[in-house]
Image 1: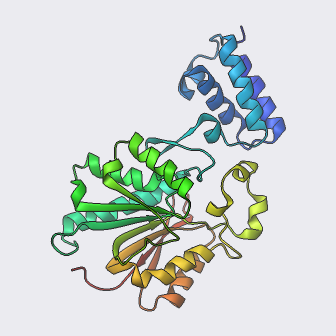
Image 2: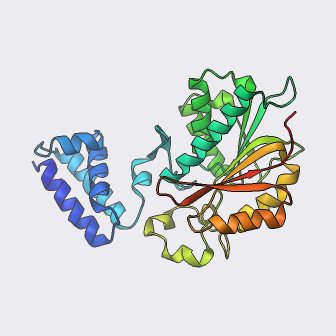
Length: 302
């Protein structure tokens, strides 16, 4: 029987030849998945023998990855914000940089719950996740609120997406994390139907320039283009949401929008041009790059 090291080394070379950007990480994750263990076990026991069944499964996973298919789709899940989310081609794979959006959104919700910046008595704090996809953002916040013992009736979270298929995946993930009772799902383009004003809006909308789509890693071609292509300047969909904020975001409310690393100045200018008197501050990610735009509507809550 081949050893873990032998299969891993062969897999790395195979994926490197196929053009994988991260051949060693990919091979480690796929070999661990084939063996039913996590990556740390693969690294800790390089001389362990691998049976015929797992070795054959690993070979099949490598073949799929060599075509460009994302590791997350092959394994069927992706870790995000300390949680495992089911993923498949119905929705974009959650990215590590989006964890900042969750952190900022959760901090904003908790600040409002603990500082008295609440909506009128008898109403819940309204949180809207626009373009929810797999539901990762809304679910991560719902799980965090549960862990903080925030009663479900104090925060209304709506996960919205234009794709019914993506919403089905989000529902599956919500049930898997036991927060289905803390979320409501809506199918719509950017804002829910009816009249409502939201206290906190979160959005990881498409922000890749359309002329940059062809230069993305091959793995992204397996993901829905609708979730990536942001138009000529990358901000077309975000701009449409900005135009809807005056009738969607409550007075004193905040919209947190993920942006591309090269769009920090552009988003500030866009907000200034479309939302007179509103403020826009951009928070950097761990690499110091622009990542989340905080768009605030002036006014006093309540």
